[in-house]
Image 1: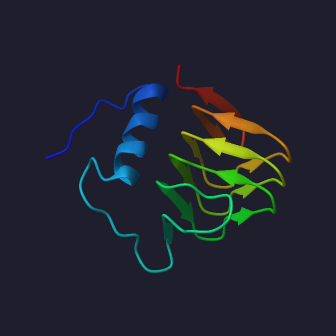
Image 2: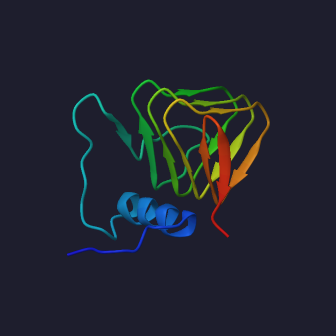
Amino acid sequence: GYWREAGDPAGYLAANLDVISGKAGKISPLPGSGSLNPGGEGCSSPLLIGEGAVIEPEAALGPGVVIGPQARIGRGAAVRNSVILEGTDVPDGALVENEIRAPDGVLTAS
C-alpha cells in the first residue's frame, strides 16, 4: 500500500498531491463532498474542490491543488501545487504556490 511521511509541511503537501494525482491509489469523493478534477476554464488537473468552496471569476487553479470545504479563492487569484484548508480565504489577485493555507496562516512547503 501507499505510505508517505507527512509530519512536516512538505510531507503533508506531497501526500495530498499524491492522493489527487492517483499515486496513492484511486479515489472517488463521497457524494456531496466535492469534485475531483472538475473541468472548466482556469482549471488544470489534478485538482480537488471541496463542497461549498467558492471559486471567483478569473481564478486559475492547478495543477496540483486541494481546496477544502467552504474555502474561497478570490477573483484573479492563482493557486498551484498547494492545499487550501477548510474555510480559508485566498485574497483577490493572490499567487499561491507550494503552500498550505489555513484561515489563520500560511505554511510554505520548501
